[in-house]
Length: 100
Image (cartoon, rainbow, N blue to C red; front, side, top):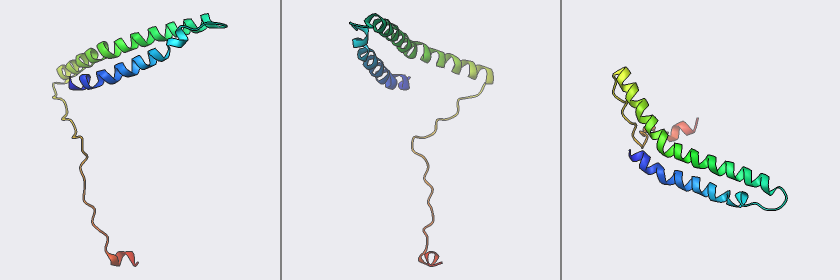
């Protein structure tokens, strides 16, 4: 659930920036204006639907698939990896090794 909260704002910002960027295309005038208006309308509508799907449908489907996979397999989810990778120490080279 925390991931959904963290991703909501970037999804909305990206989507609305793209939609507002299409506003001039949607309000096109002059030669070829009707074709541009159609393209703008279709693209804006598609982006609105895609945003709605990304916000509402994808998280619900994720939860459903997770529950089904746990019910079928009976296994617990694998523990999440830590954010920081483990660091192994590398032995230092000696000055004698450099002379070879």
